Length: 421
Image (cartoon, rainbow, N blue to C red):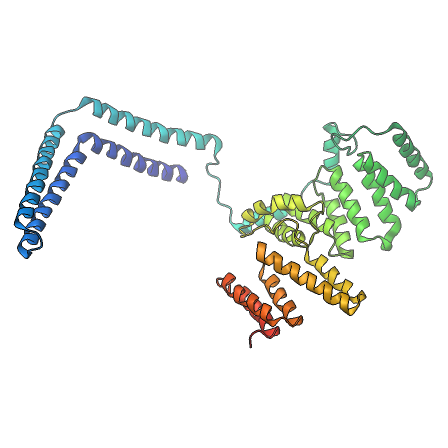
């Protein structure tokens, strides 16, 4: 009720301002006020002409010509003011009708706004502070539907055991072979290789429900020897069977993958997806931002990440700019450095110079982060090219002038390279 009272008072205030402006316009007072203002301006001009003539700035003849022109304009403004005053005392029916028509339309607009909000808005809905939204998201995450519930809903909607919609028609011979494999495994439930083969073939047929059950048996048979990829495969198949939904069971499989390999990129992608599905864009953004920076350009999740990260950043209140497409991740650069150990001294120098030159060209054409500039200065210092390192340091001072923290990082690299003390 308080909301409606406050909204009504504000609406009446706005409506009053609009109606008052219409009434003032219809009364003709605006024209009269404008004429009075013009007359005052011309009087000031006459006095200015007299002052200039007295100081000798303008000749007598020129002063006379200016007085005549300003006086003519003053008389015209006086006539306009008199005409406006007379018109204000004379009723004008057409403008008055227009005034009331405008006032009526304004009132109708206010009424439509109230009706629209009452129809599609949420009157009386309380504000939700950040802590409450996070608590609601955590509750939703904890109580979300299970894998079995989602698959049951899909089955009731017409899907068949997690069969992917739009899957291509399978080869009858392939289906027959898979059926034979299923029958054989009923008699050999501990056949690890057979269950691995069944999981792959069920997935190829689009039977993701059967596929994740076969993969779960693979993980069970392997026990402590199950790898991060085994668990990531299990989570992947469960998510596919659920139409992209990350269920609690899929989350458990992802946790198993990350316990064995914290850098498993497929598992990290799905964990970010889980947070995005449960109203935690802040966590999803942090996970996916790092994942994008560390992924190879052709990784299957790179394009979905590039599409979603700007939206997630906005929802999380983060300022973010996508890195250039095709940029190699830091992990790949480290692999290049590891390869140096197997090269001859001449090959190492040649490879390092090539990497440094590639980095320099990228920074010159596309720009880059502060750590890239620091890396380039350090590399030039190690190659004994202090002049080029100094040139990069000079340019960096202009590029990162507004970012003291980034500039300090680069300055430390310049100190290490012997460019400055």
